Length: 286
Image 1 (cartoon, rainbow, N blue to C red):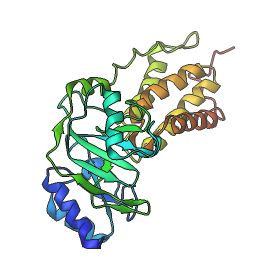
Image 2: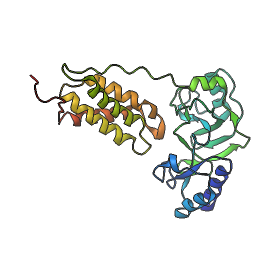
Image 3: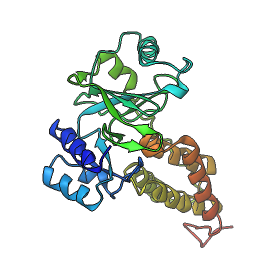
Image 4: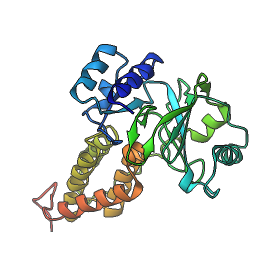
């Protein structure tokens, strides 16, 4: 594929109404910071990006594009080395209904099925929720677009038909359950509940609202803050871990963020925080 083809493919995706942004040349990671805010369908902006590096790959911001993309990973499906028809058969079994024919992209390791997302609720990215080897990309996510190429192979349009609506029953399968009620923060005797609860809530909110590119650092800093309170016996460690895990859960599957990475980041932050205990009421303690 020649370099100008990448710009042409980026403009073609934008012409479908799908905001795009550049990925690193030959890769799948964003080439710009703050991509959720800057993904665009503006041809001038797109041409400017690709003038910086005509080998940039292409990403589609699935949330702003009102897309929910089902990602079939051939290596992790139950079928052994499946062809596309085998993968669709497996997806049908998981959805308990045939997947509607739709715009489809062949990837180096499988297939992307593009569906029109509902206006509400916003459907998050998921990892294996529909079964092994079946991930999805939606709100706060992105997919590598057709026209991109990597060392593993190219992304190419397999079926150019219009994007179909995501079936209602599939929407139900992908809709996250309501968040559990926040447990009461355990505090030491003599401490005003509101003060400690405000600290914990503030850190949890910062993690939940973290933008892509700042997520890991925000989670680490929040764990460090709570780790200082744990070290001072102001806060129960298990509760601190639960609060942070709950706040970060919405990020799972976004930009490859995994539960393993979540737990590791929280553990590292808590461990560093314990080096500097923070007593909320340093005086009058026994």
